[in-house]
Image (tube, rainbow, N blue to C red):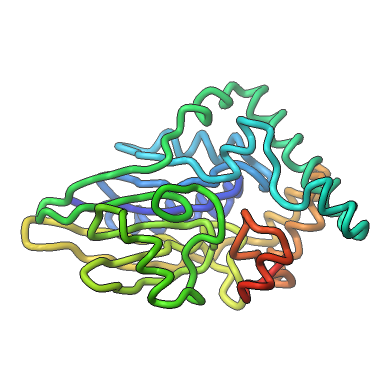
Length: 272
């Protein structure tokens, strides 16, 4: 079996199209596993959702931003943060407007219920008996600091200790990594969109598995980021200036999207 595994599309259908074309050029996939953050932030949330749900044998889990679109929750900063630091007001307004814009688009096109039904995790047993867990941030959660290279071995062991899996697949932090922790293998897929510097290409993983074992191949795909910038400007996206900085490699994602800036800095994580 061949499985294409991806995460963090963030409404960027241009990046997604390039990635799907690359998968097709490599012989396609029997299944697709998508680990959340599907629509929010990008210029084409509904287009991205249409492409994802049209994939054959697709399994999709929710990300924190998918949950925000359903529940009305919002990421940092919150009103309490602004009370402590008034300079955060502009960012607060941008976040609110961006999510409201996306929420309006997916509600208009009838995607709200499907996002509400997304499961937290996906489990699968490969032909050789390998137990797979796919989840957006870390076992048991779609949010928080997630899994990233700055974790110590002890911290990573603690995060995956109760995963009941041999292969743990995550996204969320946008920071691709592939590491063994004892008998377990942990893979962060990176992101389709809003990739961290210096490599802004879309990332995904191909899994090939049979009764003799499994092989993971990590792939990078370039795409037309200028086309994304043009699309954002054309529709006057409320967070266009913010997203364009990522497209130009001028901004680094906070690899702890569920944390406040102070908490992220305390952990030594980059902050947007």
